[in-house]
Amino acid sequence: MWILNPLWKFLKAVRKKSYVEMILCIFLLVLIPTYYCIDVFHILPYMYQLPSVWYLMHVLLLTFMVFNILTNFIAVIYADSSIVGRLLILSEHASTDNNIMYCNICQCAMPLRCWHCDVCDICILTRDHHCTFSTTCVGHYNRRYFLWFLLYFSTASFYEIILIGYYIYCEVTIQFSDLMVLIPIQSIITGFHLTIGQIFVVLLALNLVAISMSTLLLIYHLDKVCKGQVCHEKQDDQYNFGLTHNLENVFGEKWYITWISPFIKSKLPCNGIDWQKHINQYKRD
Ligand SMILES: [Zn+2]
Ligand SMILES: [Zn+2]
Image 1: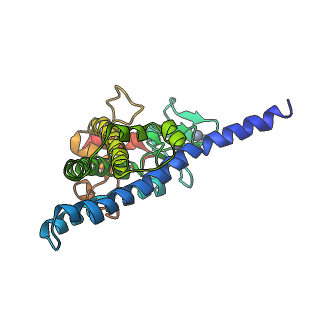
Image 2: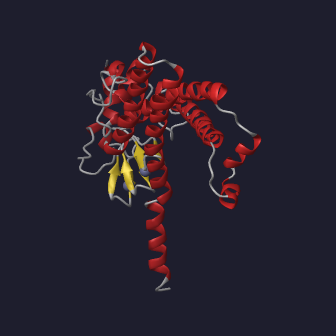
Image 3: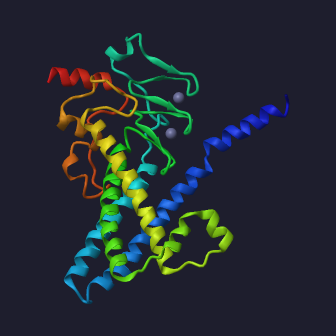
């Protein structure tokens, strides 16, 4: 038994600091600038005779989108929604409530909408879900960044497929054998002798995966935001304060300009700890 205990602890630690998550995170951070460089230095100069106003407009638009994708993504990781370093003070009404939950792992009373994340191993305020790509939990303080990341990512993916699709149509001949590059085992056996056709097959395939995943996730999460819910809450209606208030609760008081950049400060009306006080205030208004 003496060997099983440390082994179990080790396996749990490995699971919690998942290498798969780290690899996915790095993969995404490398892939986005790669696509950007291919567009700016290869596809767009092919499409427009330089110097060109159209080229400049495309570059500006792409730069704005990539800037927002990367900065919002980093902000998701950076903005901490956990209970660490926060005073969990609840209003009188909430603290006398008998239904208050207790987290045995963090050894604290859990505020409303707070859940313990098994991967992060900490309680997260207004926990939405654990994001595999950013290796962190999306909750009260970083949900805004996650949603803008998702929106810009899916928009850029659609933009990208048009550019790549156009370039392939005009310039690249894809043979049936080029599709074999999508089967990794086959590539390992035959060796990596990438042709232009194979490179664009990979770029197109990754782009299609990005479009389908990000669009589905975006639709799902926007629906949740509009209904004033987080992922765990299925039929819950008590946090639905109407569309404008629901947007404020996620994007902050200046929700209408947060699309410009994650650097725009937008104060959240609720502190994520005392949702009961927020409900009472809303009812009074
Ligand atoms: Zn906990
Ligand atoms: Zn988590």
